[in-house]
Length: 396
Image (cartoon, rainbow, N blue to C red; front, side, top):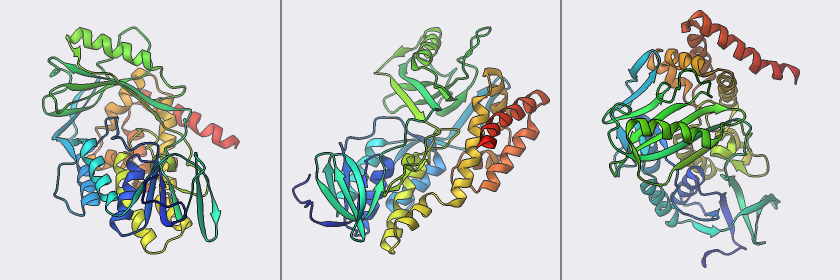
């Protein structure tokens, strides 16, 4: 516990967890003059690579800085490409990679302007005299008007997994210069060898290396990381690429339920990871200001919880969860055909599907457009996937 933090002090907000969602909430509360304390085992910069759309980076910049201009919070790629058996396509939408050190440092600076930090872990939250009492693993207790739970989601039975390598060598045949490779469903294929669907993801990094990731979009049970590693290493060997750093291992639960308890969950703890893509960082970073404004206006825990995960968002997540279940039932060829069709839709249609903040009507409309655009064999596969996804719900 910091020297200036008293366990007897009553805080406006206690935030548990220092990932993007938790740190964004704590920083936003501090900049608004709220008494806030952040509890986390450590405050080291985030290690994983965070990708988001360039327009989402603009929204994050505005949310964190209060203006559109300022320090570069990420690296931008003017072109984003996908590749399927139908060919390569430029999506016409820029991509970005978050500068973790810059964003992390910015949020810590904002938090230090009025908030406090405690090194530790939250083990319990319970009501206490019109507020909430937080218990830490070392027995320390804190009291607050509101507790925000940003400790991440549960393990989930379906996961996105990836094995990433920073490589040196000529990658232009895989990742066009200056572009981000969102999905390549061809590069990791081995004709005649049945495999779990996996795509290649890639982008140039600031040090001149290139990040390549063999990615399983969604699988239940999850695809073992060694399988993805071996597929990526085979591709690297064929392309004459060399490893330049330690590998990056990714495991993102796609069907974890929102945390229950006295705290208000945010980010992955609120089940806000995109159920079909694993994306969450842009939404997590934008949530902080909205939560802090609500607390400043006097909102109670129920109102803040409804703000973070209201009825409309739950409906959207339900539809996207159905989309995840459909993807889980597709083999390599069917997955290639699905995304080869998905990205032929107008940009606003597929973009709406990739955003958990979209209205459910927009997501449903995109799902219908995909079904109509698929060839007959693809529609049959899609229908079978929907039937598998809906059948367990009908029994409950």
